Length: 109
Image (cartoon, rainbow, N blue to C red; front, side, top):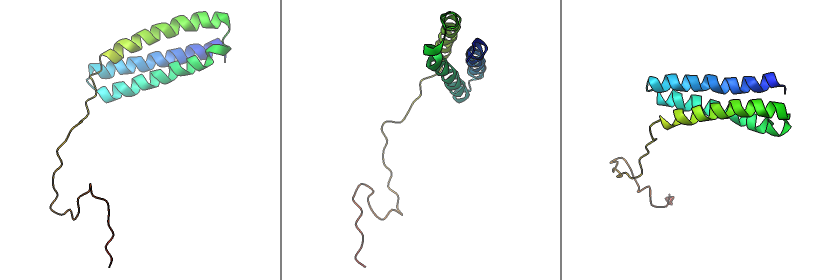
């Protein structure tokens, strides 16, 4: 993989970060997370190629990827925390024939 391909990967990550920034501005947090994931994929691809890079490539790509990573982290910090329900109250279903917490017992008929 040549320098052009490596720069394209860094550029792809930057494009995804621009998409994430636009989505954040529009409060489209799911889209922003998806774009950040795609940027992470591009950065991961660069990390995979790092051992095979020549010193000159490492100098250029390392600087570019560092800037992209810093921008990515700033955008990720703008995402609201994902909230999940950790406790809930079970509601009884009048059509339910058995308690779901009880082991299933097959009738002998």
